[in-house]
Length: 115
Length: 111
Image (cartoon, rainbow over all chains, first blue to last red; front, top):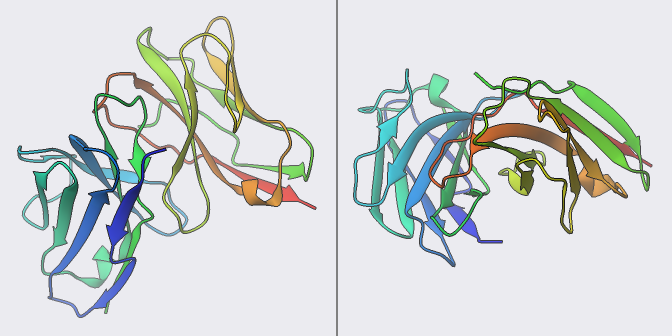
């Protein structure tokens, strides 16, 4: 299957700072990427859908000004958590796909801890 | 909200077949049944999907009932590395459609 990477794999930051998470499709062009968040012992919750070159579509309840998504190329999408607070601590996972695939390919996830 | 219902957890002996059920009684005609799994602290992994015919690949088999209201994922010879949370999801086939994850089934394979 296609490979998706995320960087960093884990990050610890102070409250009030911003953190950028990268999601890359390594061996295919991802016209669509998704960002999920997963709290401990819970399932994945979709945050937003981004199509290359377009503004992201956010799910209800997700603040677009707090979670900035940029999908500027066919192999890279970034999620920036602005002014992070302890309640933003979570496991952030991206997935990618294009019209040649019937499934989504997921990255390994990024563990964010906000102190 | 997820449109599927799965048991919270299941145990399976190593080497035996693991049969994971899923109910999707409100599935629409254009929706496929997808199965993903998530091993602890990793991203989900695609397993298999189908519309109405049974499907098999190198990882698993998918059996969908004739009325499409339920399905079963079969891991023919479970190993310890198959211990994971298994998610059954219904979604249209078109790429770009979002996946709505439910709680899934925690499968524990025991030696």
